[in-house]
Structures are given as C-alpha cells and as structure tokens.
Length: 234
Image (cartoon, rainbow, N blue to C red; front, side, top):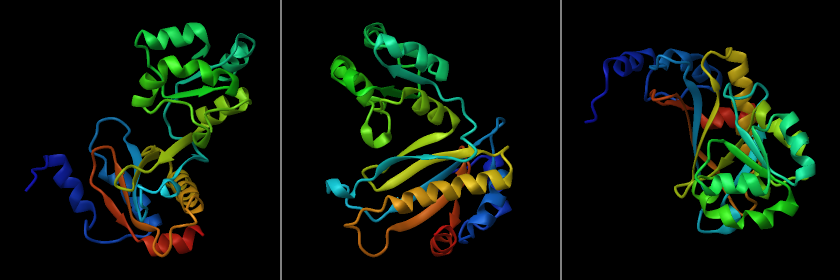
C-alpha cells in the first residue's frame, strides 16, 4: 500500500474518499484538502468514453474561465514586424518572427502559450518539433492561430485554458486557486464542465463522462456525482 505523509493522512479525515459528492459540496471541501504551503491549484480530472484511435473522437478546445486561473500566463506571439507592438501592448512577453524563432531554436521556451498569425505558420517549421514536444505549437483547435492578436492575447491572459484528452481518455486541468471564493471556483468549474459537454463528439453514443474528480495540488481526489453534475450544468 502506498504510504502517505502526515498532512495527506490528516486531510483524508475531512471527507469520505468513497463517497460521491455534489459539485457544490466537493468545491466546499476542496480548500480543506490542501497540503501545500502555497496556494494550491484547484484541479479537475475527468475520464471520458472516447476512442482516441478515432480522429473524430479526440476532443481539443479552449474555455474562458469567468474568474481566470489565478496564474500569470506567459504568452508569446509569432507575428510579422507590423504586429509586434500590438501583441506586446496586449500582454505578450515576446513577439516577432525571425528573432523569436532563433531564440526558441537556441533553447528558450520560458512561456506557457504560443500564438501565431496564419501567415507566419509556414516559418515555424524550424521549431515545430521543439514546440510540439512541449505542447506549445499553435493550433487552430486551441484558438492559438489567429489574425486577431490583441483579443487572443488578452483572452488567454484573462483565463482562457486549453483542454485535450490524453491516450487514456482523461482530461486534467486547473480551474483556479484555493484562495478563490467558493462562488468563483464553482462558476469556473461549471464553465469548464459545460465546455466539455458541448465538445462531445457526435459519434459518441451513450455515456460520455465516466468520472469527475476534484483535487488540490498533490492533494487527494474528491469524487463527484456525475449524474448530479449533468443535471445541474445542463
């Protein structure tokens, strides 16, 4: 049996690990399960009934959380020279084309999201592997290939996050910090779940969401009653 630390064992007494809670109750319990010295992230983990071998059964998209994530998002913009000022004024930490591409080629990837205008995408071939391995390659499904640089940068920095299922049909995302109010966390997690429901592939029949679990950074998982959530969020 896996051994847990004293703090972890202590928070396990705050709730029943075998019980399925309403979304409201799970969010209420969440702050009590934090075991870190810093403000933990509030995380949602979902398992879906998808067949990842089928291209039309992989979901990927973005959702704008009403209250953001509580994290500073570092955005870079691959754009032509005439759009550099626009990107930086909107909040991008770096913007440009040749010089920025060379910087990444030399190993710099100190950013969280990369966006690009359509006309610059052909130039990113040099760094496609570097960006791809870190999940940073601009992609239309993630909304990171855009002609509206200003709006895209601002939206991402305000709290837009990307979701994407893994090979085991799981989704893992943060939806805020435990120092958010309960109402803020609840509104954020509902917005996230609704986005996943709306992204259901047309070819998926029957049960779509198998499990929903909430947790804090390194904390135990709180099981959520899926049927109750579906009635509430829809």
